[in-house]
Image (cartoon, rainbow, N blue to C red; front, top):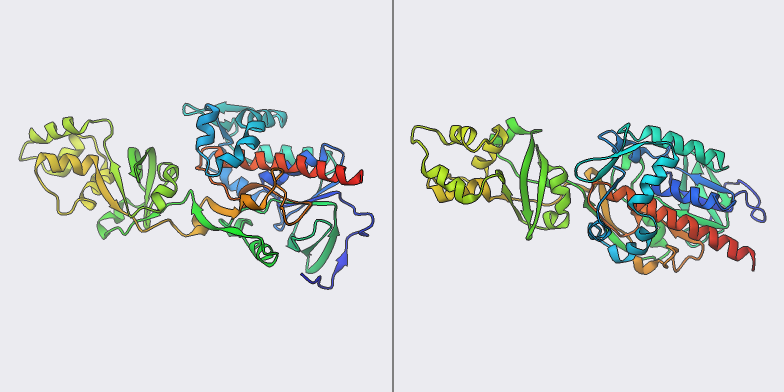
Length: 412
């Protein structure tokens, strides 16, 4: 990339920063902290006016920072787990909890093992974290958009306040996110710089997104209704939990847990009454009073709410009245799917920088001194604390590796 006219922040022979981190999300902030702990001069360049906007958005519904469960089970939740295993073994759920405690944020563990700050918010943790980074001498450069080139670790261009600024540095850590929630800063525009450098990427796909369903007008009164205690299954994988009926399909934890199995399937099955065995349900229908309407019977004896009853009728047209088919309509209704919701509506994305392009230190093999962290790398996981844990862990790993790189090169 040919540098455009601009200004230099400092003389390249004596850079103001040993390491520049691009992106002020959890991965970038953690990378900066680890690098700064070694005594190096560190700056974080964030293209938005304020840091960690997506992190703050996640905290609005209760900030789930990690999940307490056996390590083997924890790792099984990740796509790309073999490459992540050594990283998450060094910085896992216990370390996330310890990290929160060091920021003086108390946490609690819910009944399912999910860990939350007692405040249930992201803002107190973020404020404490930024204060600590400031005390360590880390500089936060707001409204600084990285424009490349990725091939160099020594000098990078940024668009800031209507000018193009050149910032020399000894190493660069990219923690620029995936391609969802563009309005919060994670827009995937960095892909252009990587393609220009001929670095292969795995195409981005929606993850932790709703799936599209072509509802009839019959379902309109139930848009926005939550469905609890249901089991979804696709491609032989099951998920028990809650989801919401939307105007374009369904979304929620039970959907996200199925991930690609849901997005790549043409149909899913739904059990609307997992508390009742199908044989018991069939017996109930066999004893049904002919005077009872089906809807009333489902309400009184199967204990289905209005939205669940609506799904029984929506997904089983025409309704067959024999007990076997009625039991199946409740326990194994087939839902036609039209694929995942658009990528910008996804909580996260799959795809990104291929592991083949990275060393074990998360440094780009084609670009010595340039490291990657967070969601921009090709790994994936459901919601439930896994995403934040892996972002923190890869930031922790890249921050330490970049500091080692700078120190090793200083001795040459």
